Image 1: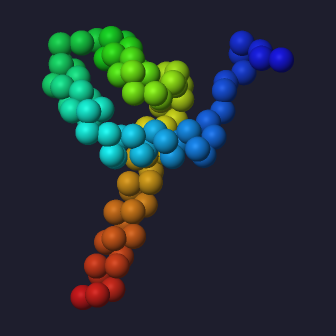
Image 2 (image 1 turned 180 degrees about the horizontal axis):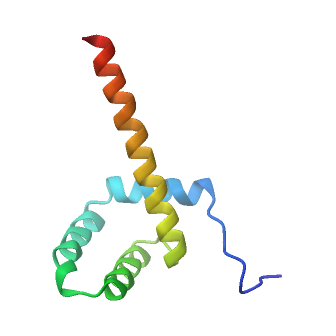
Amino acid sequence: MNWFWKKKTLSFDEAAKFNWELDTNAELRQKHDELAKQYSNLSEKEYRRELLLLFRENGLIIDSDQLDTLLLLRRKTDQMLLRQEANNDEATM
């Protein structure tokens, strides 16, 4: 039974698809860049709504909470990769 107060959890496949689309879908990236340029003219709520719509148009059906989770995972992954790269650069010097 689906309870309205229970959040839908994200699977690894959903997170991987989100990252794959952001990294490889040129049309999505272009539209995302265009939306980002409009950020100062939109409220946060409008921006998030447009962002979720953009993802839906590209086959990523997620809600606002899931978007927050996916963006946080992406940020943390980037931080880990940058730290690892910095450590590798220090080791080669």
